[in-house]
Image (cartoon, rainbow, N blue to C red):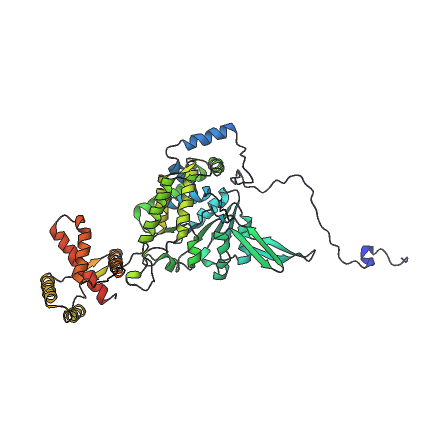
Length: 510
């Protein structure tokens, strides 16, 4: 170095950049960003022991012996939200969760419960999500509009230091053994919704990118909030017609809750009074039966219980599932007798949903067995998800003219003489009845249609199929329901209504 050059430092050696790698050596790790006053409620195989004091165990025992435990816990969920008791029940059972199971083949069956809240604006949907995030020790909040498929699941990124590819966790991975709250779920891009199919059912995330192949755990419950198309829920349409969600996504939710903003003077006054009292007194206005810390300790204890299904409860589950399948009219949305009047199609996933909900209710009561009353409550909650469509009434009696008369003339040409006489007597009897219009609900119309179709199909399956007349079909129906009527006049009115239903089925819905 010359006398006139001065000091150049390490730059003079030709080194432009230095890379440092930071390494921590520790014997334990403790989170410094835990939520204020929160208690870990995660209890799985990795954490079988509970560090509860004797006083806390006695408090849990007192809560378990509460005769109104279920009702009081529902009142303690999101106390800043007025009403919405059914939604609070669903959120409460989601927090308790079902039992994770593994089949002999090694297939994992999820026990986490997924809930979706759909409704009009300003109906406290986002408030439920915010309360869960503040209450649960491991909960992630994200918005569907601002989330991508990689942000929800995982992505493969190149390490700027080493140049190697590494996996960066998304929201569902970060919420493992917790809850992922997704707001504005309907605003998600359809391509991003497809990415969470596997995470919602198999609870894993599979990645095969840039030479990295991995299957990651995403054992999380999903609490989603969505707005209907156009902002307001249209009760004359099905749930699927009100949402932009695909059928596979909808079937993966255990519970759907429809929250409507109906105008009611008493309800509006009660909500306004409750909100003003909260703004005036803040926390003092809230009067939950159990505090957040009490709920967290109780849930932490209850989640260690793995209730077993009793034979009676299993039989009742089958009965309820069969009823739900029978009530699911099913079919296309093109109208007619096959139009589905329920919120979405009933599948085996809804049976598994009833199992998980029953186990969650058993955990809520700290019961080692899933009893029949728990199954009844689970089935009732699931039926709440089946919002029936307000369809227009079916008008009968306005189509008994030309089409049916032509049909009768066509049939009369092929009948024997005795049959023609019987048919003429029947027509004379029908003509004497006043032909005024009659309206029945679409559900009743669809039920009668399915009964007639099932009976006709059973006749076709016989070794020697026989033709059946309209009057014989009416007589078969009346013999099946005769015990439900007290007077002969009621039976005659039912016969007229059924005859008109058959006429409409032949002339319009054939």
